[in-house]
Amino acid sequence: MEQEIDTQELGEKIVKVLKTIYDPEIPVDIYELGLIYDVMVNTDYEVKILMTLTTPNCPVAETLPQEVEEKVKSLDMVKDAEVEITFDPPWSQDLMSEGAKLELGLL
Image (cartoon, rainbow, N blue to C red; front, side, top):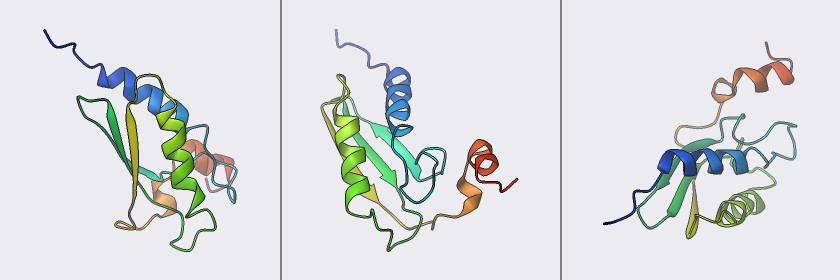
């Protein structure tokens, strides 16, 4: 019998890791900033993350996705991780969590 993947548990672990990654220009993690659009996990424990950047010419456009990939891959349960960058829809402050808006004085 195939072992049931606990995607909920893995998803929470991935989110925890994502919350350790910060946009260098804004003192808020990328998850709270709303840069993560989707996290997909398949039955082979391969993770695909759809994310955006605050701007297309973001100075960390090269390094940030790589950091996300490496940190997610470092989780025991994850076999592979891939990050896809999209600008559709473009990021806006509306995507930020209440906590992030509060921290940046936007509320």
